[in-house]
Length: 117
Image (cartoon, rainbow, N blue to C red; front, side, top):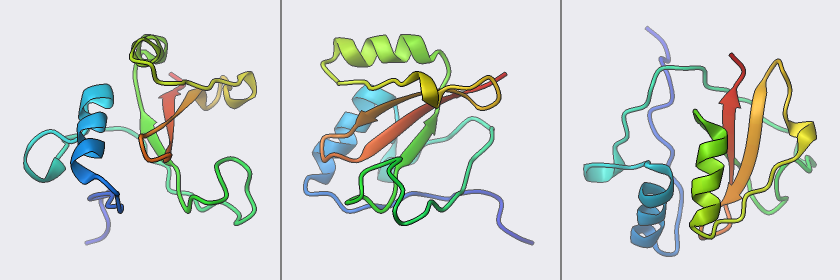
């Protein structure tokens, strides 16, 4: 008995259909009825941040972090679709991996994380 993983992420949206379509089109998330998405096995980080963190916007109570493969190819695809991608050398490390950041149509920060091998 116990928790085996995150079962879902639910959040408010001004336009749920358009926002769901954006996640499907650009990130491949939310296929099937009710947005069900079967994930690959891997590490999930569950970590509260200090209330005064500047790692993501102060007006957001959370940031979505998505585990990815082939970060450079994904970044190229997103940029080709007109999505602004932010990368900072100080975000990357040999221990934790490489990162990029985008925002969804309603401004939610999405961190793309390619874990270190």
